[in-house]
Image 1 (cartoon, rainbow, N blue to C red):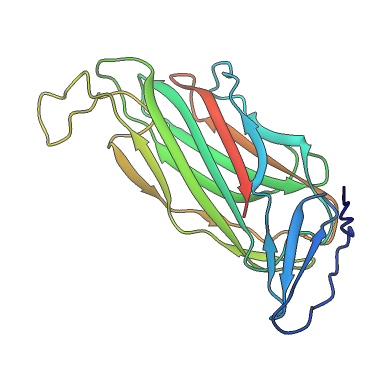
Image 2 (image 1 turned 90 degrees about the horizontal axis):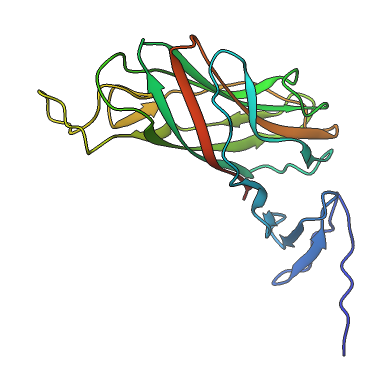
Length: 224
């Protein structure tokens, strides 16, 4: 029986040409560093939640991550991607804004700063309840440091109830739910962050009124 011991380090040494160096970062995630000094992550999952949440509206609530999802100092690398997938259901009887917030900070609570924000206006009135939706997004690390930067392409939100067709229009969807169309591309707001300190990654949700309420039954954050 053989045992391979991998070193835990925040600063791997560039290997010789044609070789890769395997190591664990400070979070305990396996990575490899190639001879072109490109850092590759091998363990994508940060946090997975399949527990159904309570009903969420005007009280901002953590739906994923928090103090159990650390991102230790200097472990985010250029070209890393934080990928999120959320699944839930929504009922809206009055049009309100739903806001998704990805936070990175030192507390793992709602007080941490937002690094990525998406907002969408819900439908209003109509028929049907608990309209299913799915949100997917990517956040790419561009630079690291005390004022690290990132880029996010438009997030994709799918929302439809194909069992209750509208009386007019091209889409067989309900008039209620988190969105007024079955496919919406959401414009992100991205904010600089400090990657040189120990942080926690947190996802939250809030609406602009009690007449728009969502429940989440699946959430996944990956670092790839």
